[in-house]
Image 1: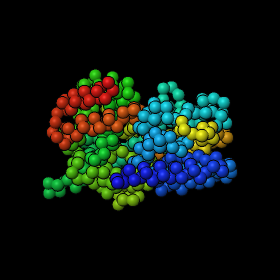
Image 2 (image 1 turned 180 degrees about the vertical axis):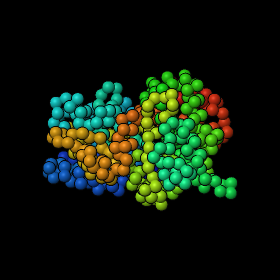
Image 3 (image 1 turned 45 degrees about the vertical axis):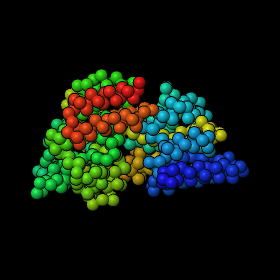
Length: 430
């Protein structure tokens, strides 16, 4: 039996056990992803909620993030015990379009209107985190982040660059800086100027999505994406800008390393583009020191829109199978009421006020615990590219990754790759 199937069987067995043995109290089954830092904070939130609500028992099913969506999908299809769950904004369209979640219930938050609930979070946060569908609000944000540029300033100084003024602001400047950070010894690349993850297409898709939105295309929703497939020249410009990092300027040798986050942390690349505030903690697990690293705003096209790296996040939802939707939303409200604990670990929960009216996130903590928060992250978070919200997002990602791969790995032409991508994506939505 495969590991994935085994995990599904185990979880479903647990759900059955829970359902049989939990009649004494009202029981909420919440499905969340497991992460060392998160687990401690979330477990404490569960304990506090149950202490205030002694007639309620919360059973939090912690899942590896890579399997979480599939398991949630399976339990919902089997009409299992699932009152609430977490989804990221790239996943939510599938579940919301299928009616798997309950719209927000203001009374659960002590409010009279949806607008009062929405105003407890930063403007646009619910939308960015995937909590809306067809004009209705379903989810409350649990995490919000955004990609920015990361550059090794020690490498810059070694190359004769001044970190204070030479960080790239445009994609043309990005290439020129990355060329100077490139290091080749004996004909072998030992440090890329730039790199992205060469095995996971989604990261390349997200960087290219940013470029496409800067160029005026709408890749944030299905309608805009399909309409953009008629813009061959603009699509080609975006794809060429990205693939030229490998085939023309050669600032990226994919053979050196396949993971940009570890590659940057071990100085196998001078720049990468798929890290958020949380990367400071990831960096500490590698050899490159914080003092040698600085984030910077995503480069822009000189004639493009002022849009930064992709914004993304998770929302918490109440399942259509919830036994008591109002109670479930009350629990999710409590679970998402610890932004100050998360910001200390480098994770951003975009909550302005709690249900009791008190301030949620203490802005001084963001500045204290996240280097360059005010200088880079805060401003860029208000200018993010929108991650595609689609019921067929995985298919689109695969199609775009195939177009990128056709050029950088197979030597294909940009025009041919774009033509194939246009045909594939139109077919996906027919």
